[in-house]
Length: 304
Image 1 (tube, rainbow, N blue to C red):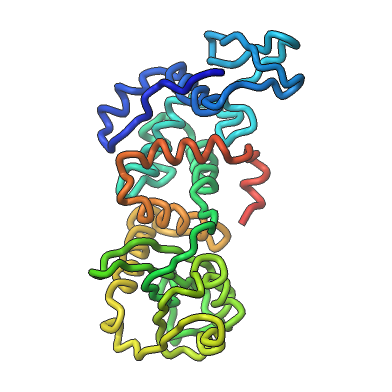
Image 2: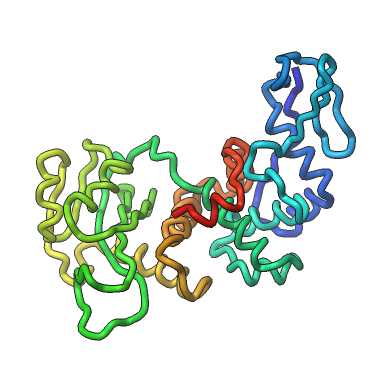
């Protein structure tokens, strides 16, 4: 059995990161030890004995001589601009506070904007929540819109061109943010609103919303208390998160297409929800990417 011995990367220091991953080969080694940390089994013949290829730490089966790369069938599949640059993108998107736009990333790494955009979309796919651990404590839920100003469009205008969004924020006993999840809405109906409840909120959670009638039917299934908004003063935590995500989207990306905004919201949530694990956040994301099925270019173009 192959033993996972390479020390995982910890921290947020860019100099320590570049010292750790100086070459593509060191990146291949890091991924190989993640992929086969529980042992190797040939995908063709199930044989467990292998030889390591020095070129990229691929496993060469001693029985049938099938060669398996560390990156095959993962998010890193067919990365042609170098693993070291790919690792740098992952580091910027996870360990830094605000990440970078595709244009900025392309300039820093001397790759095309299209290449940077495509790979960053793949990273965001890995950042999507598994929805396996619903919020169980104090939860605030509210809807908001994102987009440019429109004349005579106020409140919950269903015909507005702005992106309709909803956020759920779980807080601790002292009002600190524990977890945040977002969802995109087609309209403000109860059917649309309840999607974030079903995906991310336990029925045992203590939930607060404003007085919007779309929440009222959910009282039959959830512990939900509707309170007057009071211009945001009744739930400052959630309005702080809304302000932060709007500022991040505007300052980093300027404009986000409706088709892809959910992925950007997933990225924002991923960093916030792992803020107490900042030392390991890069390694956690790399592990996720190694366990995510390969995503081809055509999948990114048509995905929503």
